[in-house]
Image 1 (cartoon, rainbow, N blue to C red):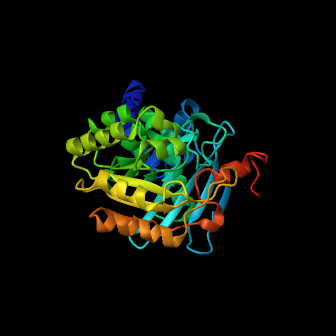
Image 2 (image 1 turned 90 degrees about the horizontal axis):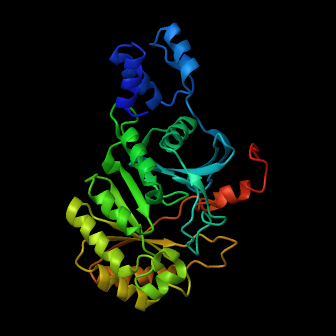
Image 3 (image 1 turned 30 degrees about the vertical axis):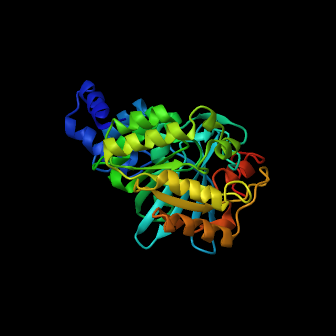
Length: 341
């Protein structure tokens, strides 16, 4: 519940408003039961437990990278479905990458998350619990959130917006919007809808190709929203919010990694102040696509930077623990859902 909804419930129960604030703060700490809310009278705790539930995730699997300390979690949802969350540790703080859907219907050719399609949306509570459970399990304070796990966040717009409101509340998790990044494959109407809210989060667009022909090979969404329409939506977003957009670009050997692709990308983005995040593709067994080699990645980045486009090559984290979106869930789908193996 949002704070105002909680307050209305407590008012209807004849309780003072400050009790709702106490409960909301406890929920923001990730408590699993009303009995843990030690500053509430025992009688009220019993009454709340009889009226309400606190939905929580159950840990199925936790993997820790020996190379860089990245942690990947597979969580069981109450209905037996599962989603993934990744904890990335940096000098500047801890970032958690959360899922927004069970599965995905976007069909991107390089992604494990979309194999099998979309099962359902995650609720705001489930997304919030990904953040809280990961931090509590790892014993780590979460300072940044990335909505870049399983699912398309803007395809679950209302629940994602509700989650953002909850996680941003200073009496809850209290994570500021400028510490939150949201990734989209390019749902134009939803980008415009998000822009109108004037949120100060960072929008990341999964571009992966600068032209319609190449992007359509990799991303079926391009049939609905071509690159010209997507670029225009990104310009509108920047004009409305003043927030620079980051473009994600996974380099696939022989598909989107040629000098011609780099020059076209530089032409499209030149003078926009955009940032390009280059990613060596995570290999997915079922997809048959291969990552570009390091020399090709460096050459691609140089063409962009020489043209005045800011580009960085993302450091690969968790490569030894199936850290690419959807890989751990795919493996778990072949096992009993409550297995910890």
